Structure formats: structure tokens, C-alpha cells
Length: 114
Length: 113
Image (tube, rainbow over all chains, first blue to last red; front, side):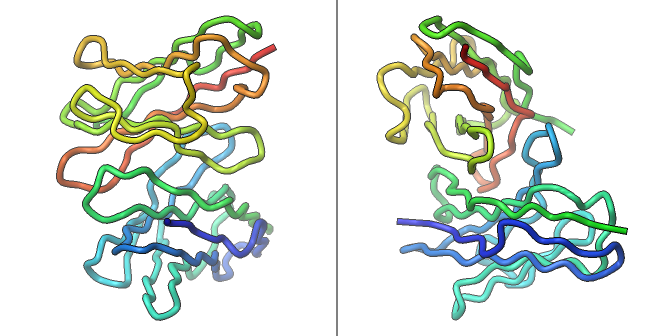
């Protein structure tokens, strides 16, 4: 079985400060891991993905995530938050190389304040 | 850049009515998916579809639900007799054979009254 746990339902940061959104996964097989972002009343946009290549993955809008097998983690970071980063972020897992379903975490709402 | 499209963007229906949600996946993609997100909850997998048949479905996807690829471009989700608890945002996604990334459409917000 596969699952993801997003440790924070809500994170608030000031503009210009670092962002850390935490995700731990559980998977019996080699996982593929993703971060998707959902802005209010919008669809799901892919931020970045890990599929067994480099463990540090760079995505769009300055976001990156590091796959740590020993910690079963895939935390999302950004050095400096921007107001436009305010959104819901989902950590997602699936099995590598299959047509398998995506399993979503419960989401982390990122608030960015002035 | 190619994208997944969904119609309608919003649909309001009466309980017990049938609804059909439509999706046009990215043209060279071969795997298709439906997910739903009840307001305030996480995104849940409903069904995956490949080679004109269902490859996997969740417990949510009961006999009231069906999927079809009627014409080689559209991918539809039908709910035969809607219930209040079917109110949700429904997302379609597609992926190609080589890449593991699923690309999502903007969603259809379904409200059952």
C-alpha cells in the first residue's frame, strides 16, 4: 500500500522568508513522488517530480524537493516566499513505471503575509 | 503547450439525475484517470482507463459510475443517479506511455441538490 502524510495542514510565512512543506511517504515499491499546487478555484498544477533519478529535484517557480529514502521524506522548499505562492500544496505518491493511481496527501495550505 | 480540458466547468443537478462529465486528454496520451475532491477534503482516485478498459478503480467507483472513450478524443465520466454526496470537484488526468506524470484538467464542479 502507498500513502503520504503531510505533517502540516497550514503553514504561514512572511514574504521573502523560506518555505518548508513537509511530506513523508510510505510505499512498498520504488515510489514516484510529486508535488502539485492548487490555487483557489483552479486545477492541479505539477510543481516537480521525483522518479528515481537525482534526489534533489528542482521545479517551477523556484521550488525544490529532496528525496530522502532513509527518512522516507520528500519535503518541499523554497528559499524566498512570494505572495503568489499562497495556495494549497499536495504531496503525491505512485509506483514507478505503472499506470497506477496517484495517492494524494491531505494538503498543506500555504499563507504568505507581508 | 497541450493541456487537458474539461467541460462543463460547473454543473448543478437534482438528486437522482444522470450527469456526464467530459474530458479531452492530451492527444498522444494513452492513460486516463478521474479523481474527485469533496470540498475541504483531499483528492481521491476514482478510476484509471487504458486500452479501452478500466485498469483500476477505487471503492468509490461503484455501479453508479461508468467511464467511456466514445470517439478517440473524449473521455467521459457518467454518474447514473446522482446523490447529494457526489457533490465535488471532478478532475480528469492523462499521461503518456513513457512519462509517469499525470496532467490534470481544470476540473468540473458538480453540485447535487
